[in-house]
Length: 524
Image (cartoon, rainbow, N blue to C red; front, side, top):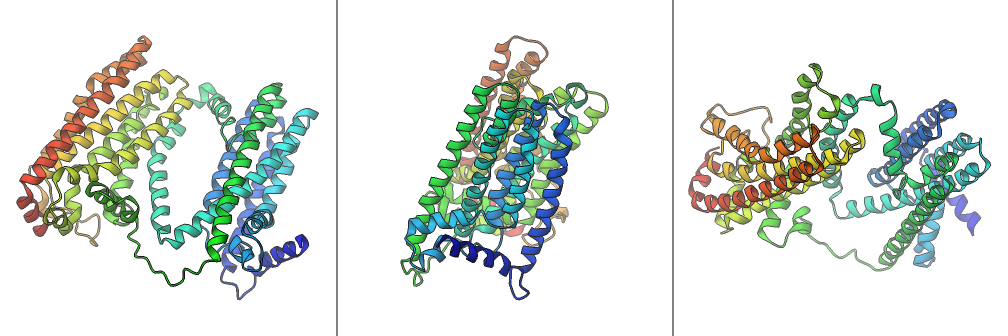
């Protein structure tokens, strides 16, 4: 029976290249990409023969993590699917659990899997100098390969569920949006980091941490063994083995459930799917938040704003880099700037609603729920950016006390700007391009007091966090450790106070100015 499944899988792969196959172009593109990536990886492996074990570990861990993420994401967004998934196997008499298991094992057959296997086999040459490291490397590469296959199966299952719920486009757009926001601090740190002075030390330092993560352990264990630390190498191998076990059990559970659902006829059911509103609804504030997220992902006007948020920190820091400001200091700036602009862009959120704002007013929704709902997506996305961006800065700068100050300042700016924007968007909205118009068209009549008041609101947010900024600067310039703690506490406290005031005050203004807001919405 195993040979029969193997033959079916091979025929399935070959069938995608037939001229009448709807997946032929995708299969050809996948094959070409696999050949190119495999050749490039083999070239890197050959070039790495003369490198130190620490640097090899940095390259291996980084490449392995990227490969793990790519396997999951590519399977989630790729069209079509595997002909031998659990739904197909259970239909021909397999039990649900056996169908899930056979679907997982046959996933190791395919062009991307073959290219991955070639690269992993070639990578064993990096640890040929030590027999024990080579043995750990062989075991780790086997575990790593199985983990990649399992992650790909989980990704394909996620893609199927997204297609079934008709949210694939929204989820992909959300992932791209987060990636774009993270691009700003990553690019700036990569360009301005003191590589000349520190060499590959940042990469090696990052690899030491990432080699203990679930998707990085398998790739770091062989080089750790080659450097002589056998205990750590075995520990990392244990982490990799546990990761594979958890991923496989997760797939077997989900795959079995999917196979069982196939045996139940649900074709007669038709459910109205409202996207994010279905998933995050339940209260007025959460419904507003869900609608705001939908606008972010689908409205071209918001997309232009999102791109601007990424570019502004880079453009603001270019003059500082040109005049020779220390790159370690500059590496700390993108995250606070990004947090500031992310919160400040809420200052005209009502105008982007156009006539849809009447739904909030005529339904009797209280202003506080409106303000909370519009602030939630910014706070959630901004929180993720602040945490991840600060971690990236810490890996590059190497001083985690500095990161404590950076985190406090960035979080304070995010909270404070969101609070002030929640008030200013009700007091001083100004007209923007209508839905469907070019995002770059700005009505001439939009100029008013808002042109002055919205920058003032941004300045007030900076002043509110000024004590935190001052403590952070003192700590970075040589102050004691408690200056960094003070920067963290003052930033969070000041930001929380301004946010609470902004939500409450903005909500009252929304209720009091409902007639003016309706007039503005209908005339803009």
